Length: 137
Image 1 (cartoon, rainbow, N blue to C red):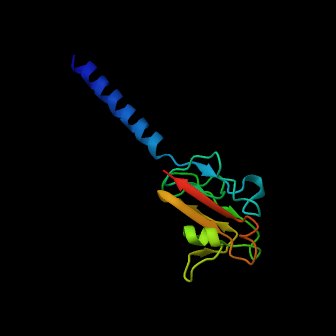
Image 2: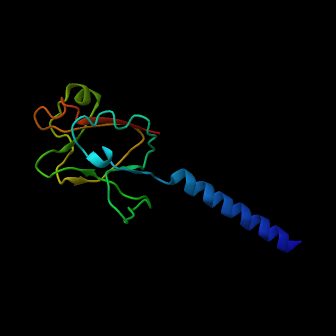
Image 3: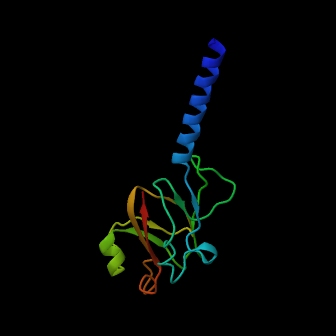
């Protein structure tokens, strides 16, 4: 009888662990898919589901500190940038002074819960659709 109780308890612990892993597993996203961070990317998030902890961009075969595959914004260094903005900055295509700006061409950004906005602040790039709005649950 003690053996069965032990097996049942162990099975329940395993189920709880697997359930927890399913909830916390982040997803890999390549911003802009094969085109990368480029013009007319603003509709790229449509139809995708994002969670807090998801990471945007692309790196292969490397785990980040959360155990999720890390991703990057990919673009030619010096040709673009990635700027974290608020809704006003997204709608106006203008970044506020002091906005977090990424410039490496391989920029890893982990999503927080809620809405995140990203633009390219190079002249006319955001107006040409180089911006995305992501809602992470």
